[in-house]
Length: 114
Length: 112
Image 1 (cartoon, rainbow over the protein chains, first blue to last red):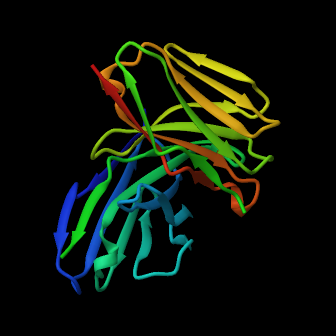
Image 2 (cartoon, rainbow over the protein chains, first blue to last red; image 1 turned 180 degrees about the horizontal axis):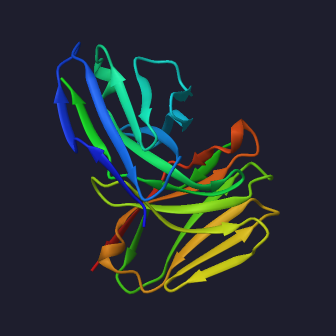
């Protein structure tokens, strides 16, 4: 069966510091991977998605970047965090093809920028 | 553009049925989904329904789809305190590469 991991689970970082969040998927190969941010208002915002190694699509221009160095690894980064980067970051993978698919989420990383 | 709307809060008594409603705008959606999010956790895919179906039942969960009105509902029978969570409705967009569009979530509170 497939499993998706995220770490760290929680992170407190000062403004201006760098960020690296990691997501890995087990039990599948060449998954489509997604990064979402969930702000306090609950809404989910799609940040990035990737269809394969080195392929990243950005949905919203902002202070973050993503990379996919390995087939089942997806990394979210920032060089300098802003207060507005605080939130709950969720990684997800897709099973199936557009337009018939399911999307499964990881446990999330709670980021607080102070 | 595509939009998914849900009421923000619902409160029920333990043992009652809960009905969470959702409206969407993209008539070309192929799948519609219900996710559950417990405090501090990720989103758990509860169930989904093909757009050519009217109803899907899975144990205590019943999903009803009215394509004409673009209305989706999730009924939870015999609601338990463990069902307290935020429930998100989502649709696949016909545009934007088939991305998922989520509602704002309905917070279900189950009182003993």
